[in-house]
Length: 147
Image (tube, rainbow, N blue to C red):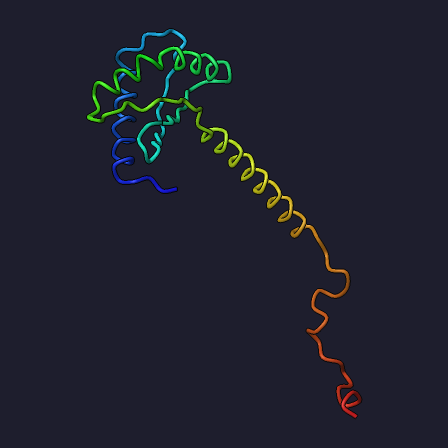
């Protein structure tokens, strides 16, 4: 379902507000270097899904997820204070799959490059089963074949 123009504008505004609040007001030591990658708001403007990534390993992702969950109420009240809507949307934080997808894609590309190199090496080292070009020389008795 495509978002309405109002939902898209609200999603952009929520993205900016949440990023500012994470930078300025959330002082949780578990919070890593978080990047808010995307926000999606339902068409009824009552629910916002916030996609985020964090620099680090799985442990950093888990601690950041816990920090975001504990700061959800404060972030929602700040979003509600700065939006001009009748209802404040509920916030849901979802870890974005972009880094994992990029890592998988990079792994697949390196594997394809490795296989291409192996194939090129086989091609250079390979030899023909028969003559290199069996059609290069016409038979000497071509008149005999025509008869």
